[in-house]
View (cartoon, one colour):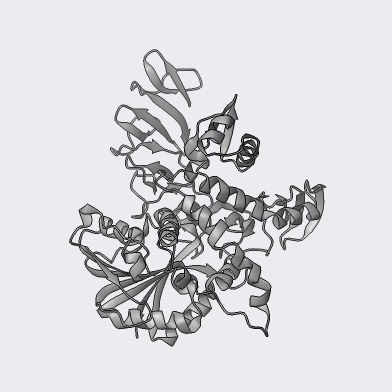
Length: 519
C-alpha cells in the first residue's frame, strides 16, 4: 500500500491504485509493520490497513513503527514510545526519542543528554552522552565533551581518542574525521589503519592557533567594554561616532567581530548576529559581564601559572573574593556574569530535585540568587535563604512574586551559619577551595541541616580516566587555589566530614548534582 492524495483528501491505495478504505485524512504516510501514521484536524495517530484506528489517542506527531515500538510526541512537547496496541511502553517522558533497533533506542532527557533504553523503558546502562546513535554491529556512535567516538553496550569507550565525526564500524573498521580535517580509517582499538585525506591544518598551525587564543578573549572584552553591539545596526562611521572611536580602528574591530561570528555586514550596515546579541546588556542571557570577567579579572592570573606549579617557591593563591569585594562595581559585574551562566545551567534544576517541595532551602554562596529564585518559582511550597558575603547580599534583588519567601543572610561561609534548613545547595562553591576549606564549608552545611535534611552539591566532574577538564582545573588553581575533582576525590571529601553519598545526576552544562546526607 502507498500513501496517496486527491481532491477528496489523503488516504492509502493498493497496487492497482484503488483506495483501501473510505475514510479521508489531511495527510497520510507509509505503512510500517502493518501500521501507518495519519493526520487529521484532531492530530496525528495510527491506523491499520483497513483504516481503523489503533488507539483513540491524538498526538502532535507520530513516527513509524519499528521493532514493535513507535515514537510519538504529545501536544505539550514530550516524547515516548507506544507499543503495537497504542499504549505507552513505559511511564517516563523525554525531550526526544528515536526509533528502536534490535531492542534498543536512544532518548534525550530533560538535561539534554542522551541514553540507550530497552523496550520497557529501562536504561541499558548508566552512561549519558551529548549525542548518541543506536547500535550497529555491537557498537554505537557517541559524543561527549571531547568529541565523537564509539562505545560498547556498557557505554564504555572502545578507545581514548576523540574525533569531529565518526561513522559506524564496517567489518571491524570505521571512517572518522579528526579535528584537523584529516579523514582516517580506524580499527576497533582506535588505531589508524589508513588516511584517505591528509590534515587541512598542520600541527604547527593548530598549535599556533591555540597560542593566540587571547586574541579572541581581548577582542570580546573590547567589544563588550565599548558596547559595540548596542550601537548596531549602524555603519562603521556611525559606530565610531557613537562610541568615540577612530573610524579606521573601529572598522578593524568590527572585522574581528565578524570573524568571531558576532556581526555581519550588509552593504555599509553592520548587524548583530544571534551570537553577538549576547553582548547586549539588555539580552536576558547577556554575556557582557562575562567577557569583562574573563578578559579583565582573570587574564593576568594565568601569568602566574608556572610559579603556581613549581614544587618549591613563594607562590600563594590570590585572595580573589577578598580583592573583588573592595570594588562594588566589580562585585556587581562579576555576579551579573555568574547569573548569566546560572540562568542557562540551572533552568531545569527543579526537575532533578523532585523530592524538594516543602520546607527551607539554603543556597550557600548563591550569588545574587538566580538559582534560588528559579527553584522557589518552580516550587511554591519552599522558602529560601540566600547565604552570601555582605557585599553580595546588598546587591541581591528579591523578585516581587517571592516577597516573604526569601531571607537574605549576610555571612561568612566558613563560620557557623545562623540558620537551620531542610536542604542546603552548594552550587559550584567547593571548586573554589582546597580540601581543607572545602571540608570546612561542608561541615557548616551539615551542621545547618534539620533532622532528615540533605545537602545538594553541584560541581563539574573530572573523569577518572579521560583528561577532559584540565584547563578549567588549572584556572581554579591560579584564580582561587581551588580545583576540579574526580568522583573518587569528592567521595573522600564527603566522607571526611561525615556525609553519606546517596546519588548523582548529570545536569546541563557538564555539571553533576550530588545528593548527600549525614551519617
